[in-house]
Image 1 (cartoon, rainbow, N blue to C red):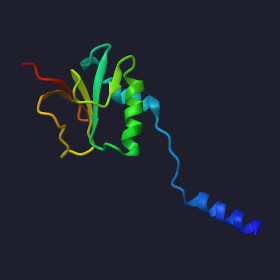
Image 2: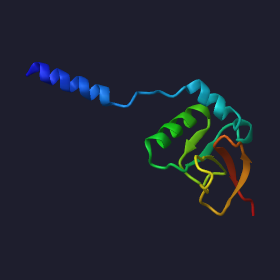
Image 3: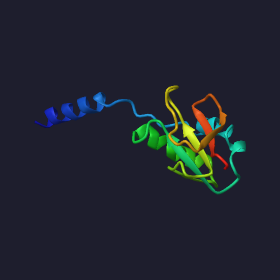
Length: 115
């Protein structure tokens, strides 16, 4: 019985997808290009076209870390909004946003249109 339990546990562990951890240094370099387009401090909005997925959550936390001391919130109502886009067909919702820069790496920076 013990051998069967051990085999079952071993089989289960082999069936798990490979665990991977993000390369935070590489992500910091990826995000570094957008820093000059943002204010040095304050609150920055965030939007991701994969909202609600584990990948989106991971990207959100990494972006918070990379953009510190700025505070990153999931909101389109901030003066500046960073968008992470994985699909060319994705459009950031919100008619009051204008594109500041498309870095063509999946990152885009928007700002609220002035009246």
